[in-house]
Image (cartoon, one colour):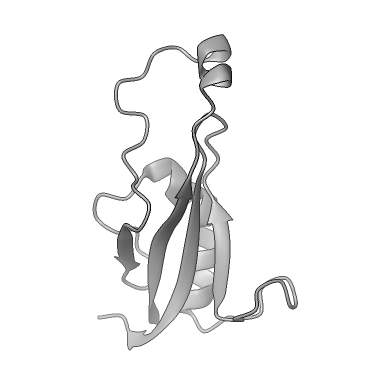
Length: 104
C-alpha cells in the first residue's frame, strides 16, 4: 500500500445558511488551508475530521492500493482526487495524492 497525502486546498463558510438552519456549534471545523495530513495506507490520519474522512476514505483506499484514473480522466494527474467534505455549512476541499512511499 502507498501513503496518501491529504492537503486542505480551500475552506468555505456560508453564514447565511448557518444563521438560518444550524444550531450553535463551538468547534465545527478546525481545518486550515494548506494543512497537510498523511494517511498510512487507508487509515485515517491522527486528528483528521471524522466527517471529512467518511467523504473521502473510499478514494484514499483506492489510491493507496495503486488505483488511479478515478472516473476515467477526471483529474489531470491520474494518481489524485479532489474531494470535499459533506458539511453543507462550511465545506472543505481536499486534494488527495498517492505518494511514492509505501505505508509502514
